[in-house]
Image (cartoon, rainbow, N blue to C red; front, side, top):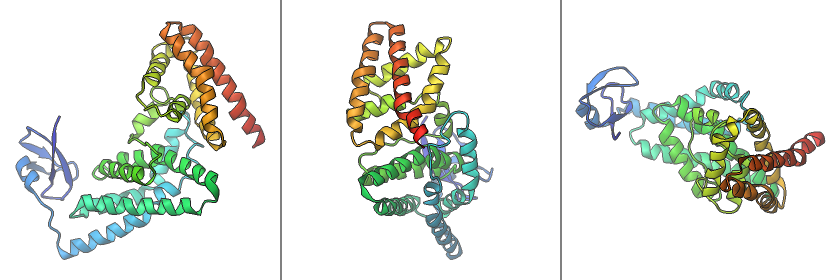
Length: 313
């Protein structure tokens, strides 16, 4: 379905209008209007409204970075059993900041420029935080946490709570994030997608291995392994329990591998010893043989990077 952008003549809210409709109801104020009137409506602020818009922008600029900096350990509650509760608590704690951003966007005469200005200031604050970290390792750890926090808290909260500004703000944020930090490759995802991804979408370790080899997220190898997981392994008697255990430990394992100076070499070993054999077995339709290798990988990585580190901590 194609959409056109319009503005509600009553409340000035931005509307996404499906083509082919003659009348619509504003999602903000509930007023019915002609599509033609909404599509042609332009925002013209009075001096008082401009003052309110300037105040809203200042509040948004001050509070926006806290959406990221308030989360100290984004991996801590990124588990299926607690993620939803943790995310809802985050939304509640950041309600004031989220509303400030929405207010600034809805009051602005030039929303595109506002988004660029708001995100630029946000990214500058992130860069300042990174510059304060000592050494390459400290910066890499901080960057990993920032990326994780954006993906599982900031972006989905913006899209979940801010019906007008959320999606365009996330898109502008990821565009500028990529420009400033070229090694990142983050994608927008809402809460439902992420929460459902514990079972369906994410392959943390295999994705990290493939990324270390320059392979995209939709490469042949990743898609084949995902299809095996969802099409075969999930349907086995203990398959779901095995997958659940994998997703409980995998994010922590990836983070701990990232702390090592030879992370690329570690990923090369995982590819050679486990993932490449799995792919060959799937191609040969030896699903049980792949299952054995998959279990061996989980056991070995669990022992080396999860329980060993837990004992040290």
